[in-house]
Image (cartoon, rainbow, N blue to C red; front, side, top):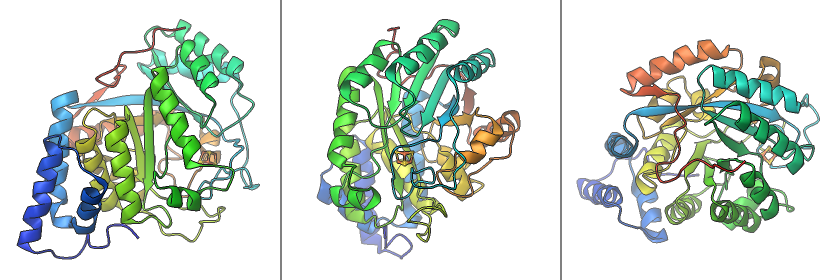
Length: 369
Ligand code: SF4
């Protein structure tokens, strides 16, 4: 269990110390593992609004009040892996499997571009059908038909040559959640054929190649402790990902973790804000899982330092089959209806909707390909 003392009252003296810690982070001071653990053991809900406010000020100083909109295509729900928490894991034979053809992906991307989107995120399980050559054909075609578009891939672990090949044909960003930077915890979430060492190796390769590399984790995942989270915060501080994909753990009925409780909204909001202070320049999406947990989740995430929203462009029947967890938000909404809700949340957060390419502030787009 994480943040055990979050709902307990704390003394005035301790409050001052926690606020000093937050101010320190805000000023860019680096922290060590023990510092982060002390913070996680002592942070209290009454201080959350102060941290959220600081996170928003930091975000606005760097990115202004834009919320970058990305078009998400869930290209396949086939996966060769068996992560214990995931609804589309290989062993779940209740999933209706699908994969988009090359033409279908190109068609969705070009239509999105005509509708103003300047980033396409292609996400899927580790589906061996999509070889480097197939992906290359798709990417080159999209870049040719949609000048200036950015492409983000989130297709799992690959070897360094594959990552290099995809970068060479023009992919800009790659999101690979590390899920847990603590080896002990990582092993409790994944089968033995997966290792934290390989995941970290992939992330370092992505960064070295020149991608805007994104890491991330689930908050409140089974067996997670404050010690694990402190390790994650230290990793984020040191790695400085260009993007941070983070959401609450949400259970799925057809997984080994079906009886594990979901994460909680306050915890994920706290972690969004802390991530913003630790990695001020990161692009941080308000994830669908956060909206699924609470109908105000997306708005509150924006009020906690997030600055990206992804809009699902996959067909409705595909979205229904791409359920990493149960009760996924807005499965039944058409994209334009969803966009209306998003616009309203963005306005309420005092921000503006931004369909521009929205690269990480320190990085340019990939002109390869
Ligand atoms: S989390 Fe990703 S790699 Fe793991 S089973 Fe799900 S889709 Fe596959």
